[in-house]
Image (cartoon, rainbow, N blue to C red; front, side):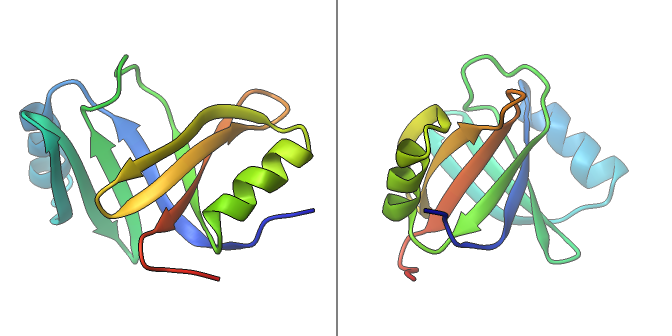
Length: 124
């Protein structure tokens, strides 16, 4: 059983200081924020549109350690969870709910994390 990947959802960078990160991404790189969501007081998710692809950053991750992570948009998140479990794929984190989406992550055989994501209101 396989999942249906629809598109690249976003590339993600965790940050520890949102103001400092925005100065770099918006000031130095000249990017414009396409989406800004404050999950809780001072906890942000910000996406920049880079040639039709989202580059996301957030300070809402527990460790904030630098990493590169790709997240793929899937047709059916619940079916993707079932497929991952049936295939014995390692789950990095279980389904998380956010205002615009739901997502979970798996690890490839070398331990690289890949997010699987579905925008709310989208279906197969």
